[in-house]
Length: 459
Image 1: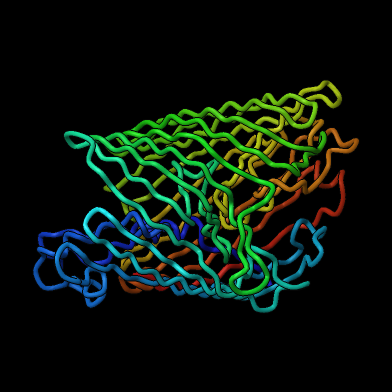
Image 2: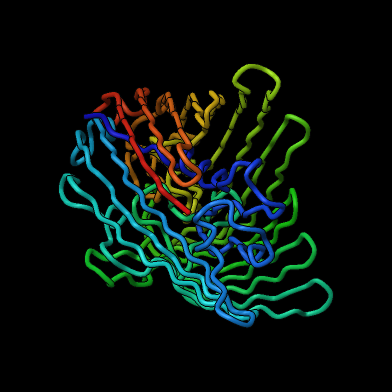
């Protein structure tokens, strides 16, 4: 079997494009785009809309009397992933195929400016060699559950205070994401204060990641990791500070308690057919007795040619992520992506954003009939030859050892997506990763192949 992971680009793009109703069938009120976190969707406009355009809208605004109403929804996903020679033949089960199943209903109760949001999850894995891990299966548990209250503080300015368990999605999820692609998303236990005025939002947060347990209702806050900071955003511009602690950090250059501070700046937007997204982050702090000095810069430039056949959206991404350049100098140069999105570089992502230089050209085509297709290439090099390579969560995959080669390998990936109905999305991906000189120097070096198939029903 060949394995897969089809979601991140396909199903996340679908999740954003899922608003659900053909334009000709809609009333003057426009429904919000479905989000991954779900709690950011505002369906209160249905209170004054005409008859629902789709049956699902009857469940999105249920009046309860006075200023109270209930919003409900669900996601049901089945996903097959199959691998051949995973981790270049070096994994514990290099040839593996399994089925992920998850169900995520939610209820969002509003009473004036106070609300309670609850989203349980049922996530199971079938056929995982060696048994399912924490991203494969959590059985039945609470994914999100929080309460918040919003107060007006003058003019159009508001402050929302929120406490409980919640998913976090900051910017393009380079440092804090939902891990939506794997079967068990990432949630945090903690508090947030959101200040909003005009087009500006300032998000203050203090939280601990939730660690899924193997049984039902046993997910707990991490005892080792914590996150805090402030994230400010306005149209086209983000500025943020994030603090992070990990009591059991491990890198190729050392291990110990890690305290890291990240300062980031992001510019993004569109102009005519062009779109861009550029982000830079610097990090400092300490790992044991070593100081931390790390950084990254990521860029994306694209052009959507809407007036030519298949309306191609051309894209080029370039990422540079620092690594540790010299052992034993008292300074750790390896960047830490903290809690990044799951499918970071595509459906097949055997390595993560640590100590790499990455070039990623791609194109997405509109084939008509709500069908789209994409083709992407990936080229990877190590930034520092003294440092190894890591997976997306930050675990060391291959130590540098005595290897000096920087080229990790190249990848090609084809994807297709069909929005069969406003609620049902079907997608497929096929990926191959050919190893480079560094992989050949440090262990098994077979080509990875992966096939992904997915059906996702959401409203």
